[in-house]
Image (cartoon, rainbow, N blue to C red; front, side):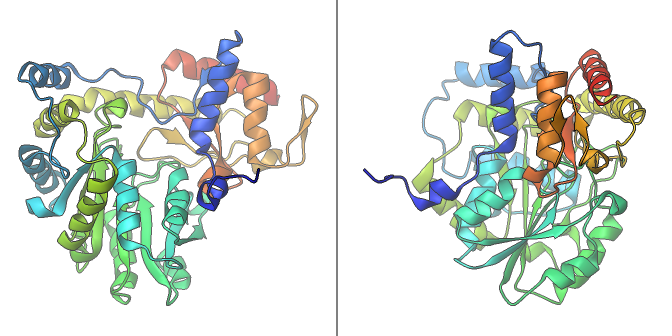
Length: 395
């Protein structure tokens, strides 16, 4: 019998971050002492005030289907958050709440992209961007950046990448996987280029907004002329340690929001009712309530940079946000370590897993074959031990 699966699924890549996490779990089940630095998941518990809001929602019998695009009072909380943190004014019809920011991205792709439309992705980019674009029958156009430019795309690169088929630009700031943060001036410079091409829609993924060590987050939608053509994507997974609660949302031009609502109504309907009630508490609270987590991530970043900086061949930038470092490890290409020849970042990442028992993610999954992603969403003791093991293997 021929393979009955669709070409769509056969051509889709598995998420590299989830695949590495699964491999690490498999080795752990065999009794191996694996330190997992592959997943982008805070190691903190969800703050108590958010959990209390969820318990209250259960007691209040929130157990019915929620509106497809989110509860009205949650949408109001999101509107206030956008105004408070981003200087953006949205109306309820411009907000759609989804089952995680990943669904928000998929909704936008399916609502906007036609077969053959090109989507510019500054590389490195989050692993699922390219696959979501391809699922919508779009064409990912990678714009390579390097550690020398802090992994940020320049206006000149953007201009060069635009063709008559360009439909969208997707980027994240703070960036997963590099931790790079676009300044207001850098976004304005990109906006200058985009204003010359009014048909291009921008997806600004701001899920790491609050995990920002520069204390200055800026949104593309706030740039002159960009509000009516930018979809701002956010959620509560990262800054509020709510990964499993699965709540993401968008602020978008109303026609795009309506289209996303239409798609979601046929795919999943409304997001989890209890998680939505908890999200109201999260967004209405002052950002200072989660500062203890951000401060701890900052300390861990400095620790990881110091320890990795002691290893020859680790070329590092200073990430200003998120909780990742993205070292260029091309120094090791062509070398043989522990009997294994390192030809690329995937080989390097597998070497660390098999020999150092440390799970990382190859940069190839993020569109950068010279790097690996290391998550420092782990305890200081785990980070110190992990980098000690890496240093021993590479020595």
